Length: 418
Ligand code: HEM
Image 1: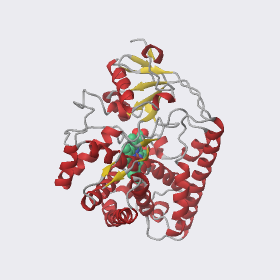
Image 2: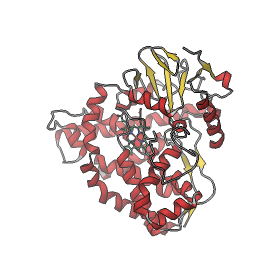
Image 3: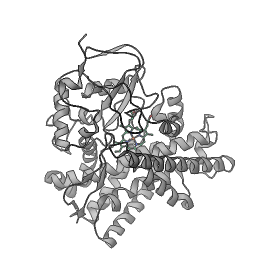
Image 4: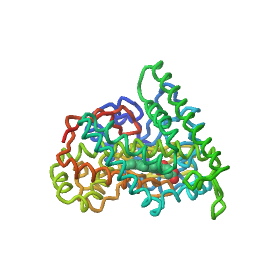
């Protein structure tokens, strides 16, 4: 067994939020150094306002280690939560029983019930609606003129698709949108304490309001099914399984949190990467259908829209000679695994023809692999087809305004032109 290497010895501190405020290229260099150490490094946790300080975590930065921890859910548990640092109590209250934070058998039961919503048949049904929504978005861009790609394009489609998919009635959509906007403002990163407290309060209120709206909708559909997904999820189906209205509320908030920012950030970063890589752009403009699937996978690899998730160790285990004890936390750094040169030659290069491309941007293989991966691919493909067909000169202008976060690789603003 080898001694644990600590943050101090490396001069790098992934637990310090200042690290996440540095330029992406600098962070890449540090992750490359950590990968070269060939064993997980231990990072003591920092105090962050409103977040409990935990005892620290082992960083998994190599592709093989992220894959192992994702696959082996018996040793690497998703309970009590997959975020790091330890989330405050109110977050656990809102998300505690959502499947991303659960192990089997509770996780498997929820995933079985809700996977129906993501079957190829259900996704095919959404196709026309996504095309119409993408057309409207481009109509509006043409009418208003290009300003901010995030607000005018990337932020509009994913939330619309999730609401349609679940069957959120038109009359409560505006309220859902408002709550989602507020709930994504606070990301747990460095701000002054009063501002953090105020934001976290607004955030919690928005998430709870969102849940209440959906729980109420679930109760209505339970009594009076309407042939939509909510009705299907809350009424007993062929297997006799159903979600309680409260589980439905948690599922919906998880969908919004998991499926909204991620898809939008992939689109916004994607436009910038395509703009900066002339051969990618040429390929997409000349033969969109051949290249878009590769472009989406490569964008998700390059960007890693979710930069990290965590697991908690359940039993004694060894990884690259380092002993992990029950209760130890490990953090899976997807962004680093996706740049592991052992798996991705010339990993910094954006190459939409890369093949194979076994990235872990949608999570590693295992029970929690992103349930919405195919939906995300479908949305991005339809949106980009509409953009590159109707506005073939579309390009990002200048640098994106990034959000300071250790979790979402989030773009707040991206100027564009066409
Ligand atoms: C490019 C877009 C997306 C990225 C990069 C992404 C990334 C991820 C990652 C890394 C996980 C793994 C969590 C883990 O292992 O603990 C995950 C899980 C999940 N994602 Fe996505 N996601 C995306 C889009 C979506 C969309 C559009 C939806 C739904 C509308 C969605 C719903 C979910 C759900 C429900 C889970 C939890 C699955 C489980 O615990 O069994 N995601 N996603």
